[in-house]
Length: 424
Image (tube, rainbow, N blue to C red; front, top):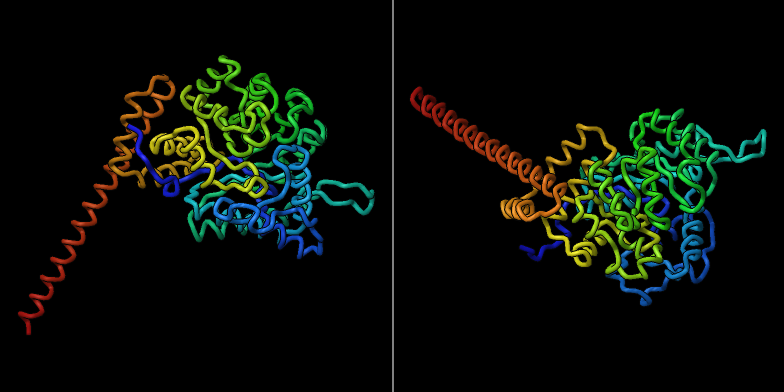
């Protein structure tokens, strides 16, 4: 049943990507020059020290086995994003690359605690600033709108609180986003060090976000165990960021599958940062999650910092986890369905994906559904088969109508030509 296929041609949806983490070494050099910052000599690798085919936008030189080296690199990069122009350039660069790799939908994670903070001249304290936030969002939205116009890529944003800054800070961020709504900011998340407090410490912040109509995507089960996933779900998470520890608790696995709660899988990030995987994707539970009927998506997390991108994560997932083309299409469709876009947008993006499926793709999807053992997975795949066939029939009807209209138009012109010839 498994056939070789090229992941480059697949439609792709990204749900887990921190905007500061998208900054490539090439972009970092531009930001450093703009702000007159001298980067350390060993900040990025020199050409010849890495595979340019695997890292086309350069490679940072931090030691992947050193967590704090990664954090230091991330912080240095994030510190160079200071102005609306910076956010415009970074957003435009990332989304353009995403679309060029087949991206049809993307969500970017924003941190108001970084992008919207400035010093209050009256108090001398750093505070969330609505004017600064609006200026940044205007730049980011401009970039997203331009990429949509150029490529069709749909983009939404998730505002996130950083848990290691404390529950009060995350609450302030939630209140700030509630009081400064933006039509493309459709979700709220909690990221940062999972060991910095329990989810119950952030219950008030999450309640504020939900009351503002924002859906929740919470980082859980990356460093901590499945109990963190259980707590995130209990407090209303629609998606779980990372979720690597889920298979440690069968009850958590069942709950995720039953409630259609997505796990945002980040293969390269997890390989580097999750010590339980021992640096080997052979230990990653992505295949186990999928076979258990749990909805997953494939994401870069911090594309620029990790030297990866959406296309690379899909290629890695097909190679390392053995996902077939039909499974990869299902994963992308799941990502769209579990996205935080409005119903109309989700429906249109899904239909566009179905339109790209060939007759062979539909047959493979049917074979996958027929042979699926997990009831949640089987039901979902059977729905995929029905929806894809419906779209194919709709396209066929449209083609026939177009052909008929073309024939009728040609006949009309021929008749008019005959009448004209007869009069002359």
